[in-house]
Image (cartoon, rainbow, N blue to C red; front, side, top):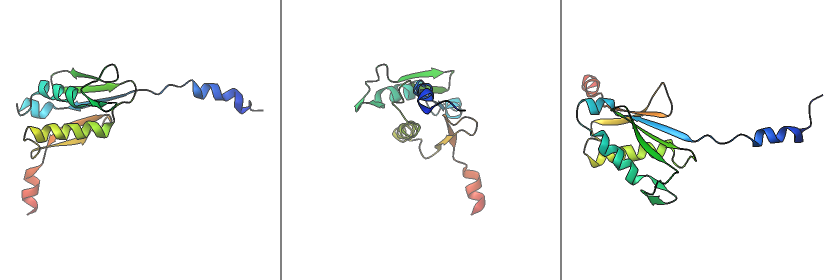
Length: 128
């Protein structure tokens, strides 16, 4: 016989929501010196909104650097979404006038990672 449903409820309630951690890989534009990773990190720190206030991250969100070309945004409380990270990255690219050459793509390997890649202009010319 299976145990009653009331006995199983505490196990399900004991699970905590795991926070989100997003990585933005800027290796290609940083290698070509198109983008400054420290200014991007500072931009994210100042623009991320927590409870409706920009720049007031507190303990809810941390913005850090992983290596020379990756920015990691982590939140133990799911205060930021993946889509919001993409939006802010595009906003940064537009502000620095490189949005026409770079695009933000979710990585095939890890779904919590965005990559900045160049638009493939050569294949567009070949189609015409």
